[in-house]
Image 1 (tube, one colour):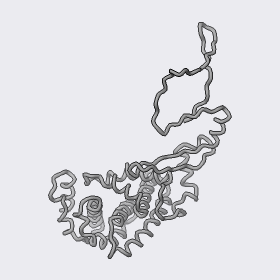
Image 2 (cartoon, rainbow, N blue to C red):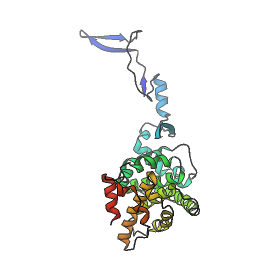
Image 3 (cartoon, one colour):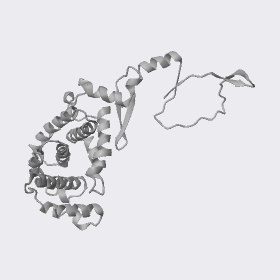
Image 4 (cartoon, rainbow, N blue to C red):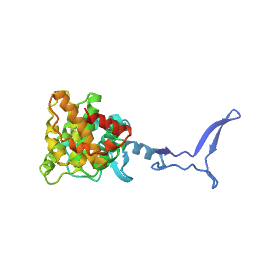
Length: 294
């Protein structure tokens, strides 16, 4: 926040203009402000120069209070600093194409990536948590995305596609993230027989939602390919926590695909019968049990 230096003010007094000098004494009371507001006193020349060369710093609080600095590139004028203008510039700039970005783990997120993470948390995750009293998709999954590149790319792909559909824009950005996630997922599935973890399950379920947004016929590609993975992790459906929540989301997806594709369910349902859902009486557990009996 920037303020122009003011040393005096003019106003009428008894019908005549008068100038009042602004001088602060030691007893002047100042209002405390919370960070990150910074007050800068500058001259007219400095103000004009600042308008032509500004940088904004953003702090992400996704990682349990661990700040992650996200910086925008310098903007040439004030109008280019609006969120809509920056969004258009991001999508049109080839350097920001996710296909040109490395797929390894990062310690920071770009402004666009942070925006997509927030989009997932606020608009997509609540839908996935509709039968989860602990809201794992809104809390644990975004946190896991900051630790695992495969989960991150899956979330970015889903958010970008959902955003593009609602805005009527191209899904090129979403396809880029989707391709990066598939590369990581395929490599992970090759070792699934000896090393299954819930990150793969999160990625599979998230990409499954991504594919359900397709307008064409659902080919069930990743769902079929992940059945073996889910059956290998037999404890996931009854292990509690994030893995169990993701497994029940997968079951809902499998039932949906089975109905629309007129194909029998290929999951080992006995793994779900050991879940605590059958011993609880909250609304989420009852909803999951009803879905199970479908």
